[in-house]
Image (cartoon, rainbow, N blue to C red; front, side, top):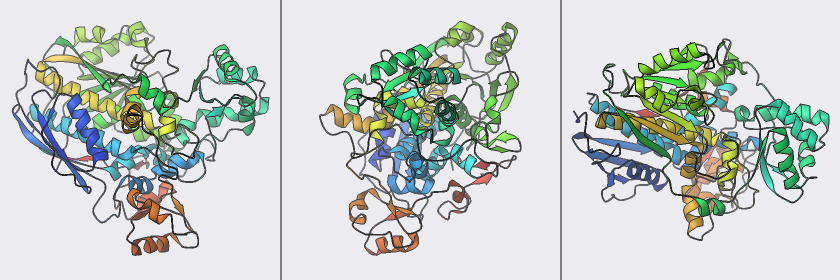
Length: 591
């Protein structure tokens, strides 16, 4: 058993060391995050393109072995491109355009790297609490299913979508050629903005619902008259209209602009709080290293609820704070047994307590719950926790051992930031340029990349905070952000830009190839050779056989996420919960 308290620890992995080998797209993320958490690298072994391996050891811990794989053996999924194709990532990202498209960033490798670090931290945390687990496995294909789980939930139920799934969406273009994103959560602000630009009234009314639901559907087929309206106005006038309406607009920044201002900060921040002994809530099990811990979550939308969801999968009891009447997103279509399938994808298995945080008596109830929790997690708007008297300093007085976690937008790291939502952060940080190769206009993905990765890094930060608490005997505040997620996702492109190179991928990168009845995606190393073959007259099966005959690897592109249930590449992976909603497998295995 590892020592419970080590007073000299400054970071959660101080006095530990690691060595890695495997696919650099995954293992570079793992190594970078382990270093930032305090571990020191031993010389790495030879790169193995098939799988990754990490050994983390030292300071009285039993060495932990982590393995990171692309996919299950014999699945034919061998790299980022083929796993994006099979798991539905290409289908969701391509909804805006009407055809599957690959993300030009290593999305699933990045997610798998973060999940691998989560597994290592959770295993060490289990050990320090008396557990015996010493190995963890992650897979990029399971990571892919996790990242599309909300879209899968909506695709594999009988009730119809809340709005049409058709091509279309931001960004908009001004008369002077500026590409920009628009954000507001208020229908009144939406209408006021467009009226100031003299958009047609019917287009304003018809555009709100697809714009509002674009987070859920990954597309926004609003009237083309709205695009025509912005093309008739200069960007300065558009900014004035937004300010008048209370909406936000953000010009799409380039990767070179982001590289020039990048401060190199960690994707999360851990701050020691008061000294205090954690409560004895029970013992971990080999596959549930957080068993016996309690997480109190006051989250909305995606980022914080996903953080808490993953902590629950690791064994924590999650108590969700909801407003009187319950979370309004419980009713978002499509529903299973009267509950939103999308909501269930992030919140199944959580307990719910209704609390009106505007009411002083209810805030006392929340403080009482926090006094008995191990983690308090929220993603309220900046300044709201302080206004309510629910900041880390407030709650740690009653519970010095608390890990106080905030998942926000900008982490106070950029000047004059717009609203801290997924698509605005994508626009501000160059993600819109990174996800599309040369030959395509920059456009933030309407797949919620940063909400998902931000939620994953929130889980990583909480696990690091819990481990640091166990090693130091002090409570910890942990802060993570969408900005940190953007920097993690674009790190290779930002390095290329900072070194004076071209940060974007070449034209046609990860472009699926059409067949007579579908699409195939070649592996990255065989894409150029595969593009020489005309597959349009062949069935998908015949196209795959033709490419294999020429020594090339490719994967069938999943275009209907409901097909994942019976996809032989994921046998038995997609299940059903008690409401009948689809479930995806856990992204780690501790066996």
